[in-house]
Amino acid sequence: MQLIEENMNFAAPKDVVMNVITDYSRYPEFLPEIYQVIEVSRDGATAVVEFQIEVLMKIAYQLRITESVPDSISWVLEDSKVLTVNDGSWTLTEKDDGTTDVVYGLRLELKGRIPASVSDRLTGKALPETLERFRARAESLARVQETTSQSD
Image (cartoon, rainbow, N blue to C red):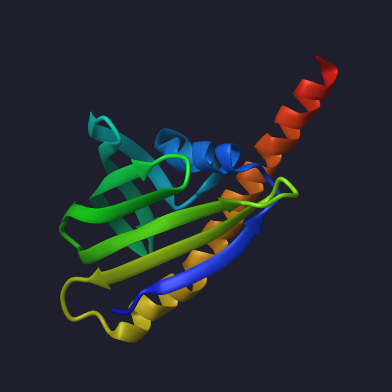
């Protein structure tokens, strides 16, 4: 499958966006399709994280995530019974106005004889919704942070 890439601007500083992305255990709070996240192991900037999701069916998979804080994160599929490929990245660029340009790339392939149209529909619909949820979360936390710092 080809790489799908989305570009979006978040009205939040880069460090807030990075914190949202790397706080894997909180994903179920704002990503309703994820019902459990387990950090299997961590060695410095590399973590193996298991995600359990429900999108048309229940799927569990492990990603090996490499965090290159503060600018990027990349991952590759470590283990899955349903996926053959799940790799991608986040790249963050802070703008002079305090916002962050985000580039999200994803390559996803399901095992078995699942039509490409099903896989394409999943990534075509789910990816923009997921990015919107990440943006809403980061922007909400940035507003809270700004309000807190103004009241100090």
